[in-house]
Amino acid sequence: MNAIVVERLGGPDVLRLKEIPEPQPGPNEALVRTEAIGINYIDVYYRSGHYKAPHMPFVPGMEACGTIEAVGENVTALRPGQRVAYASALGSYAEFVAVPVAKLVVVPDGVSPRQAAALLLQGMTAHYLANSTFALKKGDVALVHAGAGGVGLLLTQLAKAKGATVITTVSTERKAELSRGAGADHVIKYTEADFAAEVGRITDGRGADVVYDSVGKTTYEKSIDSLRPRGMFVLFGASSGPVPPIDLQYLSGKGSLFATRPTLVHYTSTPDEIAWRAGDLFSMVESGTLRTLIEYEYPLAEAARAHADLESRKTVGKLLLLP
Ligand code: NDP
Image (cartoon, rainbow, N blue to C red; front, side, top):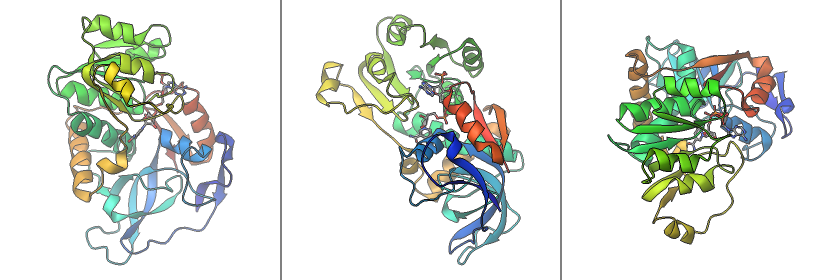
């Protein structure tokens, strides 16, 4: 089969198409023929070595939608021919992938393979951030960075559905339009304006209840300055680079703040939790209350170009690879 293989860590050019043997499903696994493969920022961290892959060489990618070709021993709940999707299992940049069935969800007919691959990883992230890490309620003010990104557009829609006031940050006017289209109440161009000062102005000096910060290095200090006393700093990514160590004492002076560094795997730790989050997302897509934005699709062979585009900050919404 064709797959993208990383033989050495580095920039986008280390993503090379190769012919490798098709995987065999082990016990409690299903072999999935991929139809749409989700690209996520975490793929950049694995490719560059910021996150460590379990072995070298490796096939990158954590997310796909496809059809079950075969199942391994002990698998009774799923069968060949079913359309499934998953997030958080390494090896999706390939025509076939063997996935633990505990990670798979059946995709309803009303959701296309592209939508499912655009939804699961970033959507379940947005879902846990808005429902579990800081359970938003009507009237809360949430600051969401990179509002036109994959997670940003979904998180904005979920936060609005919960009745929150959403302030987003973006780098360009086109991204500002898309963020407003997703429901953002206020959009700040953080490349031009001091976003902490803007949040202060918008909230009459009170500050945001929660900041969802996936940008990291270039935003964390002002994110903390954007919070109300006893607000929550949720650091969930490092698109601009990692945040240096923070002395917990710092949070006291800034207003008895809460800080957390959540990650999807701990919020999708059981099949029930995955079914809850994915089920909510699928129903919202089917009812038209949640929209995915897919403007960037690449043939599998062009994974390197896709990564270069994602890192160059020009993309919006979801990026997909098509096998
Ligand atoms: P995005 O589509 O959001 O792309 C990244 C965006 O970050 C860019 O488009 C850009 O938006 C912004 N950005 C700001 N500074 C930089 C920079 N220096 N270089 C590159 N981008 C920058 O990606 P994803 O939706 O895939 O992921 C968003 C973030 O969420 C990532 O950090 C990812 O690691 C994290 N994440 C965390 C999870 C978790 O459970 N902890 C799960 C899923 C994602 P703009 O131009 O508007 O500034």
